[in-house]
Length: 455
Image (cartoon, rainbow, N blue to C red):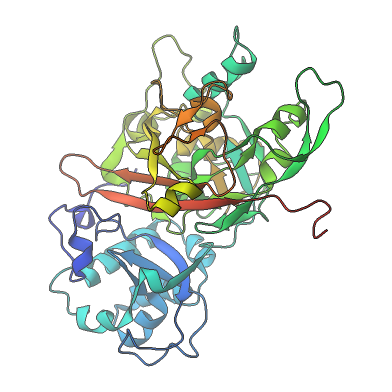
């Protein structure tokens, strides 16, 4: 497990003023990585005349409301030799190559960035020239995602949804023994801010013998986290829990958009297919596991539940496998935007309520010899809370469409309507630690295309 060090000091301040705001998601104690390029093609906001032709994707560091451009930082700022070598692949926009370097490289880069960005740093005057306002940064997927697996670690979501379909046995017999997952679709993963087109599909209405085809009528979101793999493993060589804990690189927010009517009709016997593959949205900034160290908590099972099998168990995982992270879903309808109303919070839950930890997901994925690679993505599954109103999807909050939610202004929702903007947020806070966040994962629903497309 990552130990606390000088980079976690809650009293640490940055020469980037906005990073010292107590409510920022990106103080100097965070330092997440993302892939971007400048939005503007002129330099009216920046002292370096380089924007007109400098359009190459590069990795940046979120610090307050700014982005530290590592492509410029490696050119215009002196660095220790080790740090300069670590920044090189990031300056070239190749986060996968950096991920492959492993945990020691992550920690060394974090220490170098923390030293360079703190108050009084000798590198500050050089790096001040390498800042880009976040609102002038075009973000992309942070790395090349080779494979995507979605797990089912939220036991409260699994129970709530199970009750809708199997009131007497909401959890299947394997749930408490094995981290369940399915292989997702990489090609439709997008970055926060993109629109999501309502999908077409086949679904069956109750009491109607023949299934129908058309735009989904029960479009939903799912509140999840996404975990990026670091070094990965060779084919045929599973990871132990200790290796899995070292290997996961960091976390983003993830919205696993779902067509519930299509899902209900297609998912037996092979699981999710077209109901999930039309869109998945992630937040742009990867918060590394090192930044999350102050918020690690003991991982425990409820009394009477089976303990994990030995290959999914370890003393460090029991001591600090869970992560205390608050998760939220906000919604803003088209009518709310027209009136100027702010988004409305629908729920809040916590990642520490998940039934399986990050290391357990990663170790289990490799136990059969499956090879994971740098940049592979693991979804946690929907992260609901145990209490009423903590459902991580509208399917839960509306009890399968039977209990509409009321929004400010009197609108109601059972499932998403066209024009709805869904925003996921997450943050960690604890006594003796600086609050950090993951930023936002946002998407707006667009109407379905006419069928056939373009007609």
